[in-house]
Picture 1 (cartoon, helix red, strand yellow):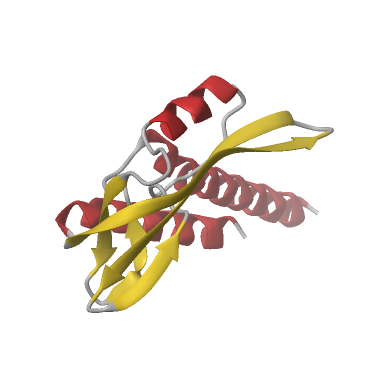
Picture 2: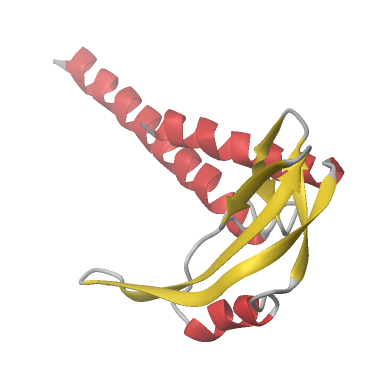
Length: 142
């Protein structure tokens, strides 16, 4: 499981890196609001929810992806700061993968949050490997 998370996270990191060289088009923000989620373990988290539309070769697309590594914040002011940059009707630059225009972001590049998933995957992979090694040593002693 850790390896799968690691592979997914590394793929997203590569996409984030590549996105700085992707072609771009102009899009328009359709919605910009603060989403919140509350659960008993982590409390309330906040996420900027921005919906924008754009066109590539006369095909219309819409998305809510801001960047690679979009995550929620525990402090609503962080999410609000992102929202303040994207009011409804604002024209935005949308960067899209040339071979798949539905893969897109409005903030290209690697942001700090993009490291979370591959880091989590690495932690699980290393923990699983260490557990397997220790189990193997225990079995050889018996």
